[in-house]
Amino acid sequence: MPWSFAGWLGLGPVLLLLFFKWGLKSGSWEYWGWVEFAIATPVIGVVSARFYHIGWRELKKWKVCSDTWISLGLFLAYFYSLWSLTFEGGRFCFFSEIALWVTGLSFLRGWRQKRRKSGTEDF
Image 1 (tube, rainbow, N blue to C red):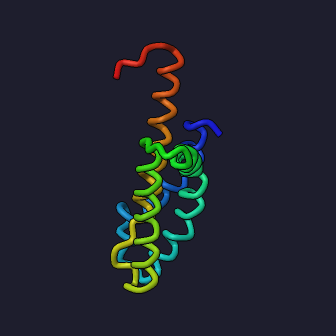
Image 2: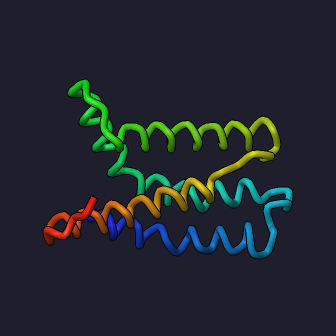
Image 3: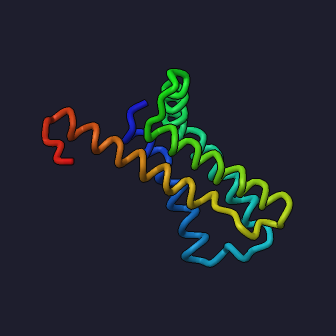
């Protein structure tokens, strides 16, 4: 799946989550953490699959690339939020932020890949 396609798949649910959480201030609702978990988990799973695949492939070669660190950060943030939701009543849930970051990173990777193919890579 191309990077930018994965980003477009995650954009709708992420914008919906952010509108409810930040725009309507629904983060204080008692069951908001579970709603956020249910909407963000498929987004995180689908959009971040390529990061995990590339990171794992490089790790098997005993190499570390940026995708390895991104995968590790996503994994830790996701399971910390799940632990917080389960045992602390959802005081520190970052599901929508994780989905936002992984969607943004997918768009960034797609943009950089397109620039690299066209030969206009500046950095």
